Image (tube, rainbow, N blue to C red; front, top):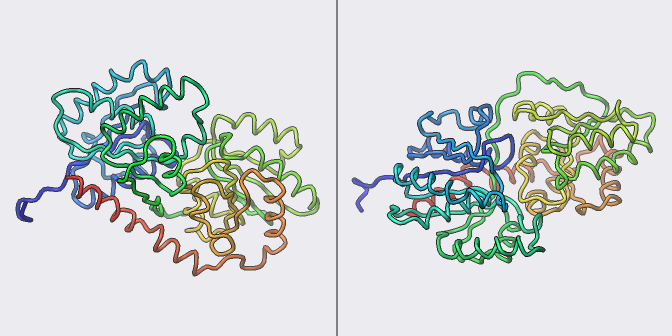
Length: 388
């Protein structure tokens, strides 16, 4: 095909939901960048759309390019299997009508539905790329007959229909390769530096030392065990003004608040509940230290947000986090789930809080090279173009 009559591939991006979490942010930023580069793109959301998140990260998406199926399920489970063929039939109609060349399916439920859509006869030719954001088999190991059965079905479908895989880190790629299928056409594209909105005014009152733990309040994110670490840390400094903010909400928010009450930390520790991306940036801006205590993590976009704002990051070494944070250069690492190691690192940081503990040039190089958004999109577009 000559350049004169060349047309860019039509891209369909499929997500289980649009919500205030990392997968939605990444998918929407990709969509926005593709629109700006002149690609024809549609967004298919299997369940529901948070309009604020959509507006913040993909403001250029025309309303007629958004399709919202409003299904109840967003996770791959036995319950989701019951209506999966019906959902796949609706997805098949969207793909046929749009005449997509490439489909980027984010997260396991979307992967499964799109693979089922490939089963229907009379479909136009299109390539399915499964996008993996999390070490899903570490979170949900194949330790039951039900899980193994679903995985066998998914493995068969993936072998038959997946054109390629994209993982957000080497850790995620290895998890998928060991437990689903090992594709030669499996690429690692690191999540990129988010598009930052300007902060007009800080809403956070700075204490002498403010620690911010950003992210959804869930068991795997490690907020509960870090609270125990913080309790020990704060008890050793009774006359110091130290504040801890959990910047986010989630299913474990109530139990975390009960733990705060039980430890007598009501005056010191605060949970914000669900917040917007702009509000999160405000809390990060007011932090002296950003802590990422995750027990499992595929990547950790919020680490990039904190580094971009010039914040010192203390992070666990779970999953892809150790691929972002270079210990002693761009941040400080501790062993995931190890309270004594985390406490020792936290105490050392506090004792040296007036010193520069990381190399600003190393942080800048990291953000401008390894995790630059332009590099991220170059890699993605290369795969899209080669798929046609």
